[in-house]
Image (cartoon, rainbow, N blue to C red):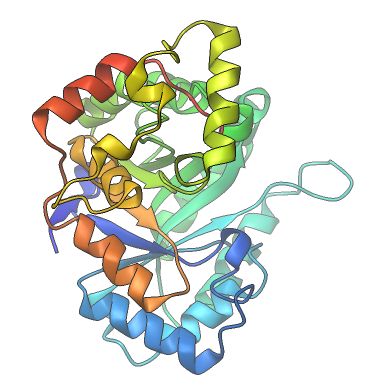
Length: 314
């Protein structure tokens, strides 16, 4: 497994990370038992994955992931989790909510420190208020040694052109250690300014779910082309887009999924790419794509030429 670093922290991270949340809630939706989850995480560790990402509001994902990691040497993995600011009544919680969330995560993982603590899904209209209100508390938790790095994830469906990461890097480059965003074949917009700026500032970019929906579902891909046709930013009638992306399949990239992961990891501004699955075979296939995390030069050049302005919301 190749390794990069988490920005200026210098902490080594595997180029492929495991996402234990989202819709699957760490395999719960697929009906995995605790033993099967443990086997899945054991295989991830065997394959060289050393970062595991989840969130406090992904059902019982934190507890299940903590149980699956129990027994593995603590220095063999990094824990990244998230605190959500969203409440049923729409009011922002007090700062004690962040502290209690961290304390709860520490108990669930049976550890003394959370490696990356993130604010979950910041929207453009909430960025400044959330940063002003909660970043100092996160900094205090970092100073206390309960958290090593602090960051946030973007809300891609509300911010397809990454205005929140852009603002964070421009306005608060010394606050955030990590930013989680979506960058991939159909989401290349971050490469324009954000990824180079993050590299310059030493902010680690965690690339979330770059092949999760549109790239792998033909009906969603076709709908995306229709949307882009209306916007006029992408030449959707180019045969390399109109007729699908099967031309990306090669001996080294045996599927669109593999090609997607290779593209997602190719940019040096990406610290790690998060992949999630409840199937060991799929996990092995995904990890294999990162052994040589790049596509042929002619494919990379054409993808950037055709889709350099792409900002798919999913």
